[in-house]
Length: 388
Image 1 (cartoon, rainbow, N blue to C red):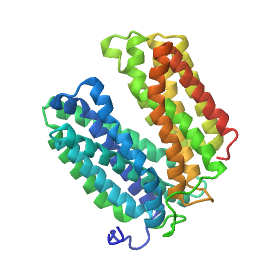
Image 2: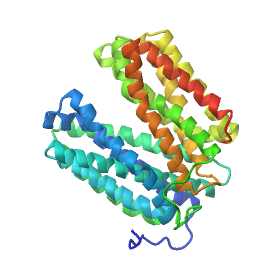
Image 3: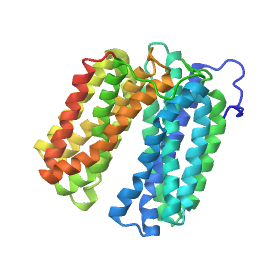
Image 4: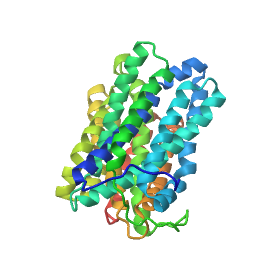
């Protein structure tokens, strides 16, 4: 990796140019992930994978993310986020191509693992880049807007995926266009990324124990990502089995949640600048709990839509603000701190959906969502005890 030569960043580069370049990377990464998500049904049908088997197959992505979590922080600390994000995006795009052209389950599985590895390498490195850009803006928070671009890319990818499916374009051909677009965007943006991270250390050990402050931030991320994971995986099921929505409205809850989560991220920086990150996180937890409580207490289509809209706003700001705070750690490098907090939060994202399933099996889906509302309250409670 030390042999790679990055495009030179010659002359003065304004902070706005840095922001545009890093924002473009967030958009490209969101496009890559959501492009795969838009074609999962196509791949499932082509390979004849059952519903039950598909759930097991898709676990290969979080497996790749999990094994690369400590590696990502270590690489960023040793090599710098600029170098790691370049290789990470290339790996991510190459893995996407592999997913599109895999001809069997045994070809698909290693590509899914690599897709998870590439996704995690880019997640840690691009967020470290975002911390570097935010540092140029002094006391003005801008992290949430980067995550908003990632969410916006999801809508673009869904629209492109629908077009490709409607015109019977195979996933492999679809992903060639996406990969070429990503690599072209990377070529344009790479020379304008932040050149130096805080705390780059060539002797950085691969495992560093996080301090109390980072553990607290990780706990906030854990609770918030339990809520996010539950909404991603169970929104449609809730509208189908609890709300008893018509077929055309089953996906409305998920759409409402995603829309306000994306929208909220573009306004979260402005709010954090005026109220402070701690207060915004506390309010976000309360908003998440309120939205879920409305959907549980009054399970009708209008009230559930209102509740899911509130949950989207509630979850939008928490993870970006937590990542921003972690990147300013004085205990370890920005990359290692982000990796530590991301690791703790990642387990929440993994645990949320199966916990809902287990609780729903033992009681009901409404009780499961009430439990997720409690996680929203935990976000507020932990934030009140942690320095953000």
